[in-house]
Image 1 (cartoon, one colour):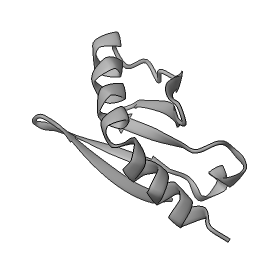
Image 2 (image 1 turned 45 degrees about the horizontal axis):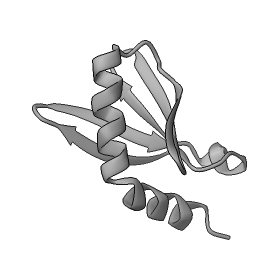
Image 3 (image 1 turned 45 degrees about the vertical axis):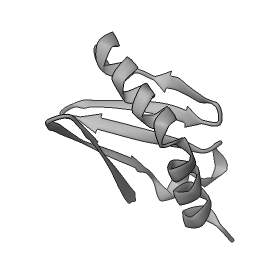
Length: 81
């Protein structure tokens, strides 16, 4: 598992992808407690909400959009042949 991290104001959200995710389009998983959401990266869109509240999903999606290029670069670097 490769971890990337985002900081949302005063709470920390692990943002990651699994090494087994290679066969899927680029995406990240975002975790908070028992909640894990999944966002596609190109274009950024929600795949699975993981029972996050809608307000949290909007904030997370905004940050992912802001850092989309960084996440795509990390994905491509990790999964390069």
